[in-house]
Image (tube, rainbow, N blue to C red; front, side, top):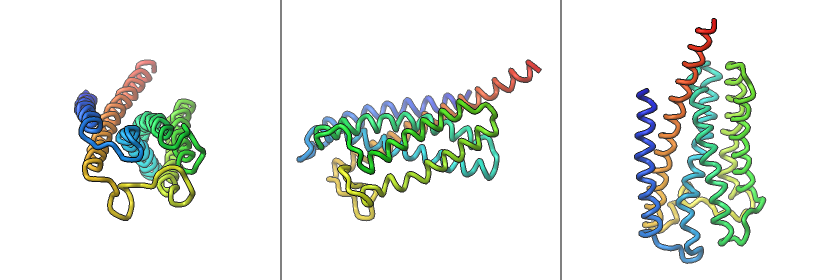
Length: 227
């Protein structure tokens, strides 16, 4: 199927570029003066968080469009984005403590940002469990759309939590009203990583969307043959 092949090529290109991100981050990007080498995880953790939030935002938007238009393509896309977003959210929650332990002195603290990102991960899991538990396609799509919209509503609170509450988590250094507060080489590496991770997200979603189409076609053909 052409869409599967397209997704694979996008993913392969993104993985090759990801190797370039790691090389640039480790060998050609300065070590942060205060945090030391542990700060290098930043170039993996922050883009993973970005992709997890992008995935949930698109799940929520797809849910809104499905509820209005009843087009199964939006439901199929929401499912694909949620599965990929779950992976990025897992990477985010794994790399965060690896960064935080040497810098903060603790693996985890129940502050606002960390707690809300954990809740985001649980929403992803709940979305996938819901889709596996509800067999009726129409009900499954509607329930999933509502849960995806809940995730979309959560995202602004995650971003603003470092301003609304006292937290160990650093404030945004790129997505903020003022200019980015990173030195040039670090900012270049971070933006490169953002672009590569976004491309990786696109490649994964395209493949998962295509596989969803193939699965639905197989189920339809099997139902017709059985009838």
